[in-house]
Image (cartoon, rainbow, N blue to C red):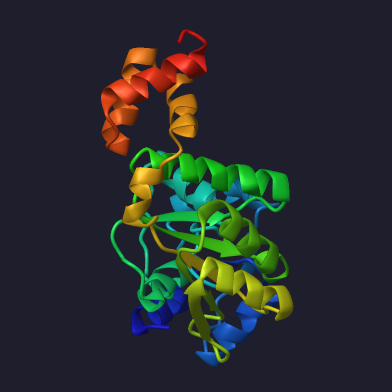
Length: 263
C-alpha cells in the first residue's frame, strides 16, 4: 500500500471489492472508513448503470482486488470500459502485481513476455491452448509466457506443459508479497515431478521460458503448415513457414504439396 493508494481510498465515496470481508481487514489496517460494496464477475454488469450514475454526479469510486490489480484477471474491466465510453475520468494507482513480480523473480528473459491469464480448467481445453501456443512458437514467437493457475490444478498443468512444451526452464511463484512468498525454479519436467507430490497453496503464478533456439532445426513443419494453410493460400503458407523455420523453400513446398494431396 502506497501513501497515494491510502489517500485515494480515504477520499472515495464508495470502494468496490471482490469480497468485502477481505477488504474490510485491509481498510481497517490503514484506518480507511469508506463505504464498501461487492463487485465481482456475477454482479458487475448489473451494477454498472448505478455506478455510472454516481460518477456522473461527481462521486468518487475506487475498485480494489483481493489479490493483485483490478481488471487484470480480476473484476473491473467492464466498469472501466463503460466509464470510458461515457467520457468519465478513469485513473489508476499502481500496486502489487503478481505477473510482473513473478517475471522479475523467475530469472527468465523479461522481454518479450506474453501474459496469458488463466488456462482452461478442463484438461482437453488446456492442452489445446498449449498446442496453439506451440504452433505460434513454431511460427516464430520466442517469448517468456506468464500464467495464473489454481493451486489444485498446478500439478496437472505442469505435467501438460512438460509434455507439450518440453523441459524448458520455468518458475512457480506463489503468495507473492505475502507472508509465505516462495519461488521455485527448474525445468517444467522437474517442477511437474515436484508438484505431483507436493501440495501447492495460495495464489500461483507460472512463468515459462521461451523455446530453446536449437529447436529451430527440429520444428514440426507439418503442424506449422497445417496451421498456415487454414488461413493462407498454399504459396503464401509456404513462404511464411519457410521464413519462420529457416528451412529451404523447396523442401517446405514439397512437404506442403504432400500434405495437401497435390504432391
